[in-house]
Amino acid sequence: MSSATLYERLGGESGIAALVDDIVEAHMQNPTIQARYLPTRDDPVHFEELKGHLRDFLSAGSGGPAEYRGRSMPEAHRGMNIGEAEYMAVTDDILAVLDRHGVDPQTRQEMLGIAYSLKDEIMHL
Ligand code: HEM
Image (cartoon, rainbow, N blue to C red):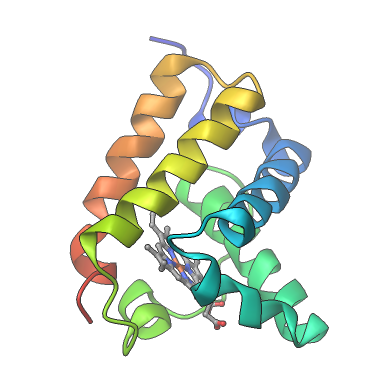
């Protein structure tokens, strides 16, 4: 086990910013979920706010200093009726990007655990 916090292992503020950019881009390219995400780019202010929320969510949730000011997970995803295949697609994108950024397997496993733990707050709402 590494003694570094998850936040540190993700590369701190700059590492997380780079991860979020690439994860969002991966979602835009992923046929299973791109229709959910492409419209968020139509309004650049909203898009930047969304990416800021994703950075803060990841920082706050991994032991970093950010304060998450976005909506709760059920609030953010209510009305989307997100299914299993879509959840898998998002998780796959995240793991692939972590791999590309050289994040170690134990840390990727931890991220997978966190993603699974959030399922009930995000799916079928
Ligand atoms: C590990 C799983 C997930 C996490 C941690 C997560 C996290 C978040 C966060 C933090 C936001 C920002 C909320 C805000 O700005 O108030 C968000 C927004 C969003 N999420 Fe998720 N999400 C997950 C899975 C999914 C899935 C499976 C989908 C559907 C394919 C999805 C679609 C969206 C969309 C479209 C938005 C933007 C909503 C908007 O335009 O305001 N998310 N998510």
